[in-house]
Length: 202
Image (cartoon, rainbow, N blue to C red; front, side):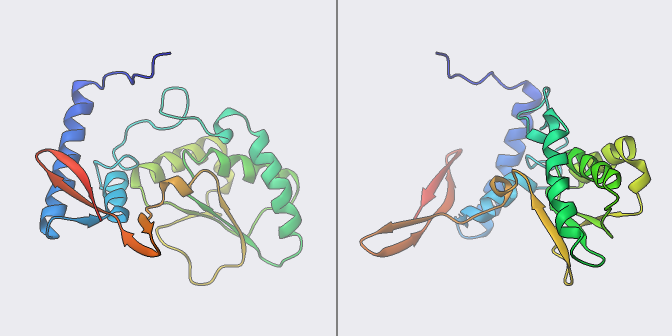
C-alpha cells in the first residue's frame, strides 16, 4: 500500500515556504516559542496564507476532503427536520452555524425549512475566513437567493442569541492547546523554530 502524498506543485511549495517564514517570524518575535493554539491559528487563518484563508479549493471532489452536505442534501434535510421541531417551540428563534464551509448546508437547511413552513428569524454564519465567506455568499446566491436578507455573517459570537447552534466538522478547525501530563504534573506544549524546522518545547 502506498502512503505517499503527491508532490505539491511549485506554486504550492512557494506558498508553504512563505507561510513558514511568517510563522517563524512570529515565533522569533515571541522569544523563540508560541503556544500550539497560536501556531494553529497562524497555520489555518493567516490572511492570504493560512489553510482556510488562502483561496485554495478545500471542499468537494477537486479539494482536500468531502463532508456530508457536499455529497447529498439528505444530511442537511435531516438536520432541518430537527431544527423545525425546536423552532416550533420558541418565538423568533434563529440558527447559528459555525464554519459553514461552502455554504451548501445552510442553503439546503433553509430550503427544507421553507418547505416545512418553519424558516428561522435569522440564519447566522460565524465564519472568520473572508475567502470562505465569499464562497458561502456565492453558494447561497446560487442555491437559495430568496433568503439573502435572512443570512448574516459574523466574526464572533453574538451577545444575545436565541435559537439553534450547528457545527458540522468544525472542531478540528478550531485552535487548541496541547499539554503533557506526567506524574501529576501538567506541562504545556509550545512550538519553536530552528534551522528551517518547527519543533516542540515543553
